[in-house]
Every structure is written in structure tokens, then in C-alpha cells.
Image (tube, rainbow, N blue to C red):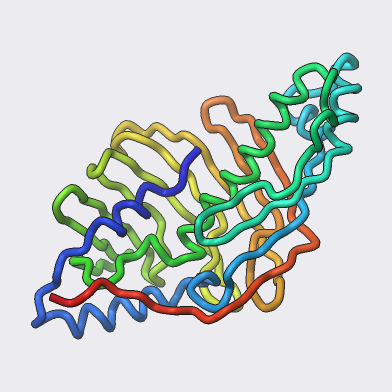
Length: 266
């Protein structure tokens, strides 16, 4: 599972805009970006949380019941304590099972690796919104068309092409692109105290027309030191329907000064 490809798209598209339209475009961008809650563009530097995951429930959701032979493995897995660290570079497991904690338990190491991948991928999919990296930044060139049922924002340049579809209230609902490689994802946003919050995202590879989806992610939020960060996360594999749910608690934040950096003007 990967982060939004659009992060690469936006980062690569540094093309000077026409100066005659720059003021209007700047105002449009500022208003649009200001609608979204992006704590990492404010004073949030990082946060760390305990991870709660119910292995027994996971087995029931996936298999319908817990096989008796799996009970010893589940007991060992459930005893492990996990903590996750998140900053702008991504999510990492900062505390997990100690060496030897899972030795001798059948398939425990594989299941533990799967859980850690789920924890980090769920938070990494949220990060581009938390850093306000989906929408373009100057000097990216873009065009915007408004319709009765929303708007379309198109970005084109060397090695990149992407289209963002928005509702009338400027919530992003779908993003697709053909460069640097075909991709698409759909999103749902809800209103929060500091702006729009990502409620769900469904990611896919290939063009939109083929209708294939890889994974979906859902989020519920909690207030930590004035920041809205995920409190409950769900990760679902679209091909199998397998779903993993985990929650975050005992969260601590680190804050600092937020700096806005732009590419040099030519």
C-alpha cells in the first residue's frame, strides 16, 4: 500500500504561471487550500500514539470464527504493545514486540508484520491531506472550471497530468491522472472544527475507466492538543474484502514553528 501518487504529481509540477492571471489564481488557491484541515502546515511537528488492535475480532471478521489452533498465537500477539510515530516523512512503528516475544508461535511473525504494515499504511494515506499536498501550490500551473454540480481543476506539465473533481463546496471527491503513471482515487470529506477532514479514501491503479480499486481507508478523529488526528482507522483490501480496524490513544504531540517554503522565482 502506498501514499497518494498525487504527492509526487504536485511536487514535480513546478511550472511558472502566466503573470496576468497569477493574482486571481493565487486568491483561488489560498481560499481552496484554506478550507482543509492540514495540521502539519500549522505548528504540528509530529505525534506518537499507542495502537489498540483486537486480534480476536480480526479473526472473527475475516474467518467468521477463531480456529482453536490459532488461540495460542492470538494470545501472544495480543500481549504485544505497539506505539506509532508520525511526522511529515511518514508513519513508523516506534515500539512493538521485543525479540523473542513471538518465537515459537505459529505464523505470529507474519501476522505481526501484516499488522505493522496496516498501521503505517493507514496513517500514510492520511498524511497528504494533513500536509495539504493534494491541491497545487505555486508555481504550479492549473486551470479551474466551475459547473453547477462542482468544479474541475486540471494540472498539466512535463511528465505529469492530473484532474481533481470537487463538489460545489470545494470538497475533493475524485482525482485521476495518466502521468507519471495512470492512477485514480476517490475521497470523502467531513466538516471539522478547523476545516474539512478526510473521512475516507479509496485508491486504485490504472485509468479511471477500468474501475479497479486496490484499498480503502476510513478515519474517525480525536482532538489532541487542539489538532484533529485519526483516533480510529480502518484499512480494507478491495479484492478480498479483508478489513483491519485499529485505534490510537495516549497520543502526545510535538509542536514548533511552521515555515512556508516556495520555489525560487525566475
